[in-house]
Each structure stands twice: as C-alpha cells, then as structure tokens.
Image 1 (cartoon, each protein chain N blue to C red):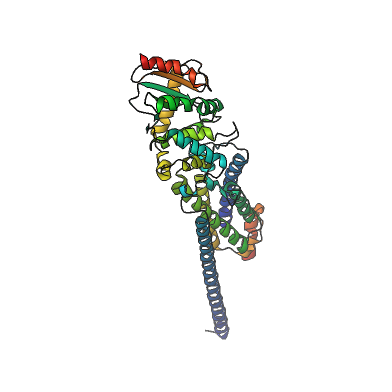
Image 2 (image 1 turned 90 degrees about the vertical axis):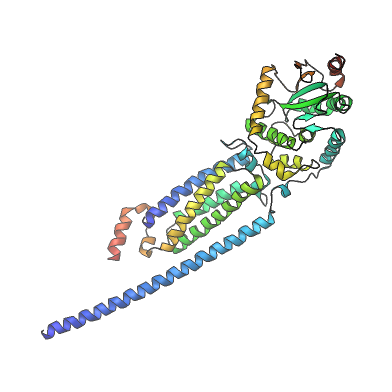
Length: 160
Length: 273
C-alpha cells in the first residue's frame, strides 16, 4: 500500500469516526437517546457518571479528537504531520481503551456506537504507526493530495 | 588492454566506490531515522499510558463506588420516610408483605408517572400500615408504560427496580423513585440517577445489583407485565387488581389516589369473605 493510499484510507476512517462522534455529541446535547439495538446498554453508558470527564462530555472530546486527526491528515504531508497523526491516534486509542474498560467493569454495559468508535480508532492507530515508521520521501511530502497521479509522476521524474 | 580502457576502468571503479559509499550513508541515515521514529513511538505510547493511568486513578477504580451519594436534604428526607414505612415488612422480589397474606393487590405503575407518585405518597402509606404491615394484604408492583417517553428508558428503570428485587429491596427502590421523581419529560432518569437511588437503599449490594440488571429474565418480565395490563384492560396508571390470594383477581375501578379509604371496602370484603 502506497503512502498516498494509506493516507486516503486514514481520511475515510476519520470521516466515519467524525460522523459517529458528531451524532453522539448531538444526542448528548439534545437530550436524546442514541439508536441502540442492545436494550438499555447505550442508555446506561450515555447517562453514566463516566459519560463526562472533568465536566466535559466524552462524546465532545471524541469529536474534537477526530477533527484534530482530520486536520493532521489534510495538511501537506511531512514527517511532522505523520507524527502528529500518530500522537493523536495513540491518544485516541488510549482514551477508547479507558472508556471500554469503564463500560465493561464499571458500567457493565457496552454502547454500540462507542465500541464502533473504539474499533475505528484501533485500526487508525495501527495504520498511523505503520505510516509513521515507513516514513516517506520529502519530494512526495511537498505534493498536495489532490494532484493525484500527477504528483506521483512528478515524484518519479524528480527522483530519477 | 589499451591505456584508455585502463582509465575507464579506474573511473568506473571510483564511481562504483562513490555509489557504494553513498548507498552506505543512505542506509545509515535510514537506520538512524528509523531508530529515531521508534524512540518517538515508544515515547508517545509511554506518555499516553501515564495519562490514562492518571485518569483511571482520578475517576476511581470502580463504578459502584462512584455512585452519586444522596446529598440533598430532600433525598435524605425521602430515604428516612421510605425506611420507616418499609422497615420490618417482608419483601420478596416484586411483593411487599407476608406471602401468605389473604388478600393480594396488584399495583400497575410507571415509575415516571406523576399520578403514581401521588398515589404512592398519599394513599399507599395508609394501606401499607393498615393492611400490609399487619399481614392482611400483600402488594405486588407491576409495570405499565404510560408517562415514560422512551421505551428503552422505561425498560431500563424497571429492570433496575426488578434487580433490586433480587435482593428483596424492590419496594425500597420503587418508593424512592416516586419520592424523588423528577419533572416529566425532563430526561432526569439517567444512569447516575438510578445509581443514586440504589445507593440510598440500606443493605443493597451495589455490585450485585449492577450485575443483576443484566439478567435477561427481567426484560421478559416487563413484557409480561405489559401483556397482563393489556389483558386487564388498563388504560392508565396507576391501575389495580385485587382479590383473594391464589384466587382470581378483579379490576379495582376508579379508586382515589389520595384517599386510602376508597380501597378499604374491597379489602374488608375480601377479608370477611
């Protein structure tokens, strides 16, 4: 998988996470119940004492996290932006792990949306680690994502 | 071999050596970069682990310990009222009173229903003191969805009450719920609210209660109550069935929610009959 493909996959996964976190944040502030197929599990999780951290809804924290990851993916790629994506996804994974622990051992209920987000974040973190460790030629770094194959061609011709 | 060939070979050798040196330098640089990235990765992972550990410690090690303590004066008053009302009366799952009491009353309610609150706080205490505490009647609490806006919330709160019944404290939970009932449709029934109620029940093991809430039998029980309410032809809550224990129960038509004396003729008739 090329660095470019990896970046696109990460953007798609982040967009999914962003949609999910936006929905959960909306549901929280609109005082609605999230769509849930597992009886009262989502209710228990969404209204538990752990649904907020230091007074801030965890759904909003998730939303801000996904926004930050998306920004790190959309700016011109470099070693620094790959590192930023890595830091954010590892942080997101750690936070998801904490919330999953609370769901399983404190609340005794699992919220489907939260579990999906945790799964997305795990995949994103693994891809971000792979992307970061692989590094990338700085010539590629200077090409905007939108130029597509033209950028690849420019990279090949300038490297040869 | 001509001198020109010899020169060319030397030149080629020099270029080859230069290329090898360059390749070695590049490999070395790549190795250094990779080592640096691994160190950065380890550093980030370490920092995240430390932050999560701090959050875990700061938010406590278990859910039941973090149940909101009943702090308000109103909650304390409600708690002491409920304790004094129910103290010494036997409870078994959904039933309050002596299981062999001659009269059975079935109370169909919705925990968020304000009329049920009115009945529970006005007429019910007299019935409990006069007939249940004395072993003449027992009351079963059944659920019927009316005031609760969402089906999921209705089931969650009812299952929470049934789970308290597993420790023979369902009536404590139900009474406290009505005493501390919030404004209708305000979304006050949250996990914190339910945990707060449970935390006010003396002798209730919160961890056991939390586990029992996952018992798959309780949602079925809520469904069975809904079917029974439908069969009885109830259109609102609170609604009541009354009869001799073990016999056929009859619908109690339009009793007063605030005056226990509207229940007395039916109960006395059954006790005499």
